[in-house]
Length: 384
Image (cartoon, rainbow, N blue to C red; front, side):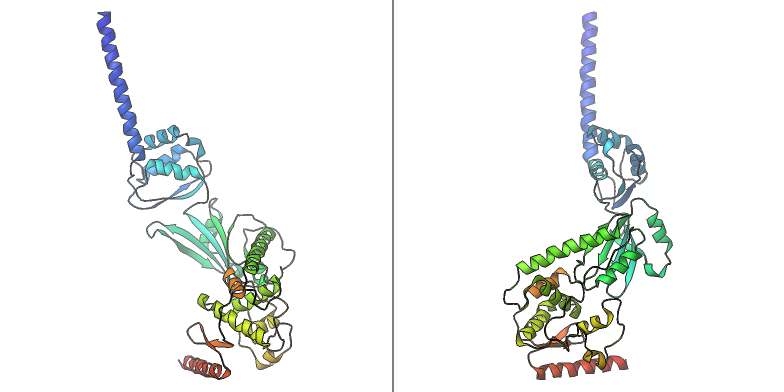
């Protein structure tokens, strides 16, 4: 009887182990299988949260089929204690294994709310963007001028949210004074700025910003990036370009930056200025005259007067020969590259063509014809 009982117990144990093994295999399959999400989902994980709260949220949102299996899988993978705070984008059909990986991997949030400070040539704006899972893209929830003192509710809510991300976008062609004024308007930054950096020494780009960051530290970062960019452009330059130092290359690039907003034109615009320098001609570019008036502090906001075109300043290239003594803005990498390696043309003139770009000319006669056409376009627009 005991032998029979032992045999039955052994049989039951084998069956139990077999069933348990099958259950484990089933659980692993379910954990790794495509999940029920029928579209992207933005999952927010609060600071101090845990896998239990996350699994409950996921079940309520229809992202997993079993909160218990989700937690067991995270425990089995040794990731239960690695949960990160933030807002994470879960793709359509994400498995439980995929979701555990996303919320424990760390790094920047991939959805949620982002505040973007844009420092432009003519204005400073603050945008509050949120991730729209239906559109699968960030959408602007609010936009305002931070220098006016009024803040929309969306911005206040974003500032009160711990995992809000911040980014600063500095446009190509901004002046150093404009960048400093923009940093002063960013109320999530701290610290004072000792002085406005030299013109041209700040790299226009998009910068991730941490809440409470020091304003001066951001300026230092931008200066370091620009040093690298100018150095790279100088090393790759065409040796026939008539500039004698990285500083002169930076000055030329800043003029190119202010003369055209059309990327495809930068090389042609650069060739005009290089050809004029080689011919001993004055550059005769309006942005240098404007800089002599404003010193980069704000926008002129009107057309130039004839007296200003004739006025003597160190930057007025209608009066001086060669390059002005300093840059007139902060150029981007594309303009630095254009200055270092301009197109090979025999153009000496250019004027607006009415399309946002310019008409280029080799002779004064061609240029005068282009100017006459531009005057006609201006007159037509004034009458409409």
